[in-house]
Length: 156
Image 1 (cartoon, one colour):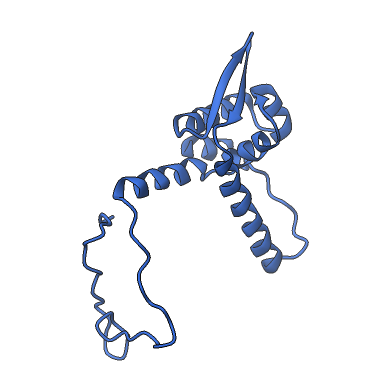
Image 2 (cartoon, rainbow, N blue to C red):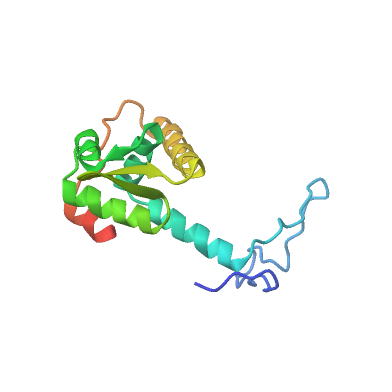
């Protein structure tokens, strides 16, 4: 994927006859078409890494659980119905991405969200998905968060 930088030129379309290209595009005079300020490349990369760490159903479910209260692994296993090794693997991904923090309490490690912003990202994404799925198929049965443990393990 090409790097995004504030001073890079927009890609020129190779559209065929009759199709719009960037050269032919004209903004409506009623619209304010000023580009949004560009973020630093490092920030965009870090945001992408964060979203990638959140991009698994089990990890989303973990964040939603931790939004309610801190939890240890066995509580997440019970709440989500997912095997302990898989929960632990997903927690490692979330921890390395700076999403969760674990604190040892005797023999258990209790996990909590590092920042409430992270819960907002997940809650908003889930709410959006619920809106869209409600539009697509009213009344369909919910799918498991880990339909294929092998697939989940490979994406972690």
